[in-house]
Image 1 (cartoon, helix red, strand yellow):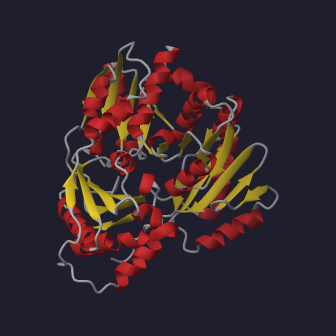
Image 2 (cartoon, rainbow, N blue to C red; image 1 turned 90 degrees about the horizontal axis):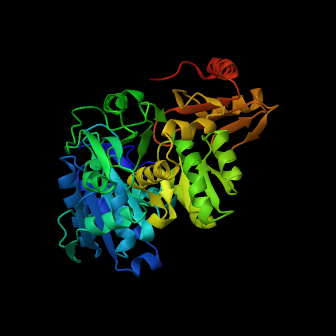
Image 3 (tube, one colour; image 1 turned 120 degrees about the vertical axis):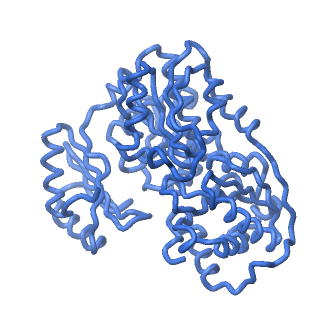
Length: 451
């Protein structure tokens, strides 16, 4: 089980790194992560799983561990991760666990965990303790259950909750949607309710991902949906990841829109109802994101990368909306949790209200030139960050997450990955020429990009 306890979840290859014994122990010791307010709600935990074949035995072992420790289980079956978050809040559970490896290849599996009201469990808020308990455990995995289990299908309530944000069903739009054989497949009936002519791609649940990897952050995984948008004359497209907590939006020209631009596009919609509200975004986002929030009368709050940090900051400020460059979008109305389908609905609402093409709506936000996120394998990550701080000491530096250096006409962030052995670079400049020049400058220190 070496290395499976990550910054935001538990994840590893099945069955060599993560097996049924580990799943039982995760369930057994999950109770130790719950506080008194969590436990007062049961204790009961919502459990669901994705479409991977090994999610079935892992979910069963997990439930056995929970029940052996006196934690009741509410099994909502096969579900997308946002549905697990919804059920945890909606059913008043002590916590929730989704069995999934998200966008990772078929051989991977894992657990995404939250406490009451979908409060995330990260390494700093419980996974570290869980790791210590599991690794030191001497607990038989055949302990009898001390608590019960019930099956509760919440999809109807979940659908009603999601569709409650649909402003209008007119005019009819054409939408290309790529589920990547993942949990976005469950959204098909919801998409039909949007009054969209749907061009479906890979809407068959298959944890082997026979068509392409379920990771929409990789350009090669967007080729099919981009082509479908162009060939079918769609108004927009969407690509979901494996557990459907992320969405990448495609414009009517078949071009992917970076998630920070979607945050900038949607933020004013929330600020119309709540002038002056805080909108949270991650520090990799464009200057345009901050400017769009300010121009709409909101207060932009920049946060480090990671859903647990974004969600905590949103809760602190009562923020209605937040976004990350990785395609996660967070909504207070959804227990401050991710909702990929909710994001699609907000984009559809915006298209219908404005009557303008998506590319035209986004164009004013494309004020700068960005590299996107670039990965580098660096042996001494902390040493490299210290070196960059010395080299660029004449810039405005902060260490919120790795190192961010800002100048009047360009900025960059270099941060250690929370889940992989990389340093990640994001750089933005006022001109393409300046961006290219500064990128080459940084490559001189960081080396050749990976992948």
